[in-house]
Length: 498
Image 1: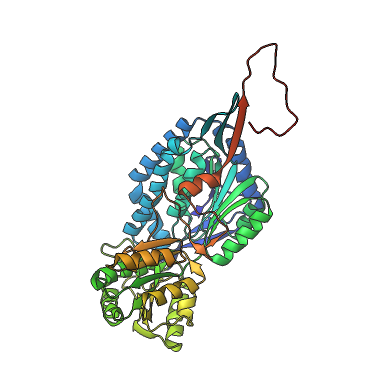
Image 2: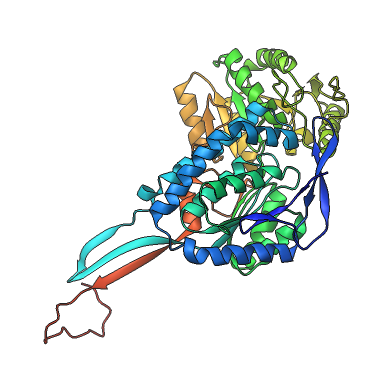
């Protein structure tokens, strides 16, 4: 059985530790590989490699860095099918869904290809007599990313292209549940002409994470995952003097008003709730049905949920694959049982699903819960699975109050034909990313991604303009070039004002 190794200084590396963890195919339930679990020594080796590479990479021309990004972007396009199958085999999502995450990640690479315009500084002429001022931004040094299992290609691609294109070097610690995508991307970078040591991968669990957070050679850490771990990462890394991006969990609501087209809304909510088996931080996990929309909406959602085709991610026609682990499957099915015990109506029950030929796979079907209240666990907890809860309210303002009272503020959506309602919603809602008739409002790469409240720890969203700011620091230069005359102007002792 193969062992997935680290990627350090341009080649696969065994590492100093002999510890490994099994990697499963979620569709079969069978182990298909081991992944090496790195420790502090392995992290230090990667940082030393990245630090050495930074000396030359940070001094390379912007043109050189952008040319690497253009080549890398083309390789991602050419190898999309292969990378998609790697993701599907370890995560369980459909190959089409895997292609979609690669495409959204590739958009950040395309943004990085245009940094020549974004990185332009400013210049002020004659701010004082014979004095000019300009500014520019420089890379930080070695930076790191700690990324989750649910998007093994896309979320890292939200980080390292911008970091690398701005002149930093990068150490990635991907999820140990689906680690192969990171190594494949490392190989593509090498083919694109990226110098050895600029991009490194260290696999592992908490030991590797803690080593990254504490290492004095790492200037900044980017993290995406659950809120409790985001808080831990932010607290630990900032205490060590690092910059931190820490994106946490979510409980995303889709509000449906009575004037909405219920077929349209239900189609998009169903895809947003059950796509990727609900294992998305932007998944729709709560539908807020307003007034008379409720009964009709639940009926349409019920029909749509029954129409979802569940199966292996590489099977043609599959809409939803398995969950990533057996533990995740059990947790989701227990959550449906708890919801029923707490008074929710189980309209569609996805528990106990078996797929012919894949009986040991980690499958559960879509579940639809009605009459859920804000006091129930199905509402309060981030389930991270294919469970859609319906909460009924009387007015749009009640829906807004419900969402604003939730501790998470990642994404939300409103389905309506009313421009007034949409404007009121988007101005009053305390959520970072909003969709109007769009269920999963992930911004384009030239905007930044980040929620409010417990969905973002600290104040640093990811990619887009905020990504540029995060991976660089500014310098402001004030210059004077006096004429070489015998009569020099005397320096004043008072603070200069003109």
